[in-house]
Length: 293
Ligand code: AMP
Image 1 (cartoon, rainbow, N blue to C red):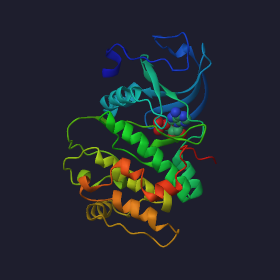
Image 2 (cartoon, rainbow, N blue to C red):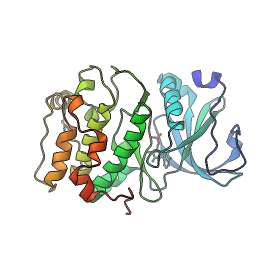
Image 3 (cartoon, rainbow, N blue to C red):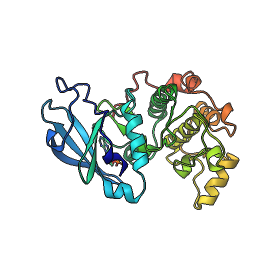
């Protein structure tokens, strides 16, 4: 498969790891600890880099499964994009290596785990917590868009929580490095913007739409266009059939912000730097970006 035939040229050493620059990683460089979770193509383990004692998350992907699902290209793109991003709200990808059967990704460890589980536990977040996360997401996306990277798959399942309670965008599987408008259909149904549902060209403003969906789901506990049948979700997205239920009680400022992000005409969506100036964000988001729980 593609990944195994090329020389791993971009093997990066964790920033905090001294004196091991340009190291070519092998499995024996790590002590493997407890499993952290299971993904579609393999497992994630807590691991310690032996020389530096640096704690990382090691994602182990089986080549056979990647090949079978024809996602080698997607993984390669994910690695290329994520390894070049440096932002406090983006999970670092320090490097990768492989053997005959597996590909290993060396990732920053997010000790507080999945945001999705937190949301399930709480059902929905307080406005302060939601605003703190949305502001962090906006800052991370401004950074990505500045580098011509569109994420295209913002959703709670792709977000992890760091040691201080800070949010980390973790999955760049659908991200794309682009200067052009694109037509590919990707992302998860509930979070897809109308232009992707209708397979017309899209640009970085798809991430503003998905952030609007995320904000809604944080505050209500479910995404706005949810429906039993996929075809109904499609229809509700295309019509922007946005309704705010009476419970839980959500401020009109939050609803105003969501309404300004979930706009059908992608050029009319609230730009991310304006989002950071919106009253709801200014009044509720913790400027540190940290939410202690
Ligand atoms: P994935 O294959 O990326 O979906 O990862 C599977 C599961 O492993 C996730 O749902 C998390 O629970 C856990 N996990 C993945 N990456 C990390 C990480 N960097 N830090 C902590 N837990 C992780």
